[in-house]
Length: 157
Picture 1 (tube, helix red, strand yellow):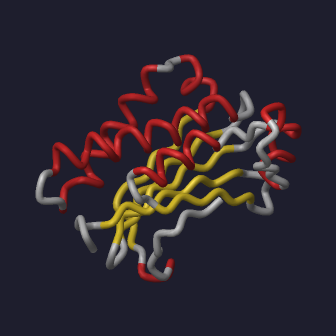
Picture 2: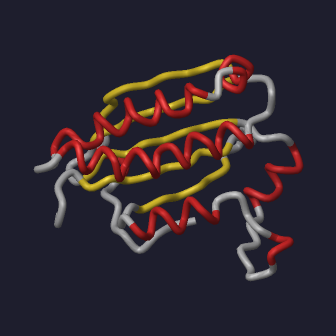
């Protein structure tokens, strides 16, 4: 899952913030989705001419990512949130372990027009495209899904 918006070289990223939450805590407190999304969006928006406006847009997309992790994560383990800064963007990464059935959908996504095959990232992709943010989903060797969104540091960059 990628958008048409260029991402900088991953080697140029530096850690900004990290948070790991136990899935059972996270799923028992749905309000954490909004709290985490707003916090990350405020940091993402700091370099923009109108940080409040940009935080609103980025918060919507980050919230969609966090809620997707909330709905998809296995009931045990951690959900990891990482914020990284590069030369041209701020990268938000959310990692989680889905159950086996959901993992297969992430590893072999079918984004065809068939409604019964609706992929969980559909709404995320539509929103990312609307606000011109590159979004990717990857699975790693440990059967974790990592959702990544690259927010440009400046409008028009």
